[in-house]
Length: 105
Image (cartoon, rainbow, N blue to C red; front, side, top):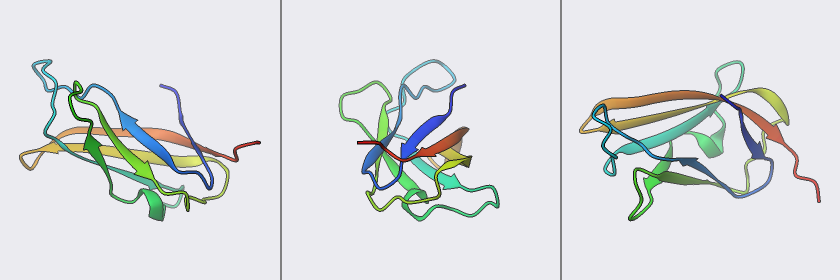
């Protein structure tokens, strides 16, 4: 699984594409959140319980906007935890490595 790349000082989106249940049906009514943590387990303010909202008329697609104030140290050593619940029951838990980069002009 490849790492997620996020850029310092940029408004950007975190996306989850094609959320499905255990029968293979798309789930369009989940509550999804993303939380980014550093090596010490501390959270990054701009991605702390960030809501990933359902994209209208999609097949289980969700996205959330990261504020342009996003400014952790560049490099590796971060993880983004995405969780989806439906009816209060956890349906998906994903942990993905994050690389923070400085966008070049």
